[in-house]
Length: 317
Image (cartoon, rainbow, N blue to C red; front, side, top):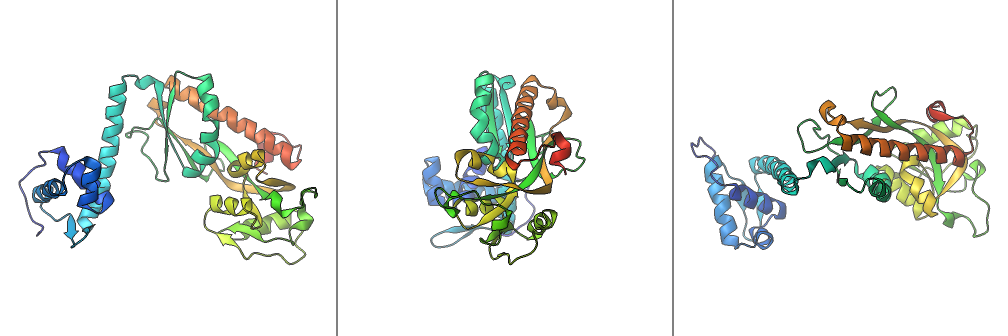
């Protein structure tokens, strides 16, 4: 189909829904199964949509379909639009919007921090329903169906800082004998030192503790902190990772923390919210609860690494 001008308009949302489904599956047949239609009906809807927009959306192959470049761009827009539409319809159907808190955050923070603790929030506020959206994209809290967001980044002097993280050295109990003593800084030369992207943080820790002498094994690097932590859990070596990422793994006993082996970290989590939403009672309650949970995590960190310095000054040092 040749691109060109078209005076046709989109007369039906069903074409967009069929297009979105076919784009996700890369198949009219599989899209038809999801939507409980025939492949011919899906194909016809997509063809009519192509005629309406004036350009091809798919390249038809004998056994599959692929998006054209313009089809790919439209697929991203349509997916976002349908997601927001479904969220709004769900909210209107429920008729209880003031009791639904929609939170967007990173995959890591959702899985490693929020999800394990949400039961405690529900016990405190059973009237509130949490809708947790884990994604890495920067959401528009002003215009999207999101009440507030928690994001990760450099937070030194950040006005909306939630938690300034700290790097800690952790390892699997499998690295020591069942009755063996915990590992110390003196054991760092005995195991691979797992790192995320670069060894800079390990070098800072070694220098700050005056243990740079020796042969260190930096043979195992990763491109994601969560993967680095998981590698430590299965016994590949000693990892240097943010405490917020592994505090629950330490609680569960699948990781041990090397006492005293920690170093400052410029990263952490911060709030993102629209001013008009920040004052909503449901948002205030959720934010207050998260800040209490973070404060508790900070207290356990100070206890575990054996440093008596109190408060934020310690965490940022």
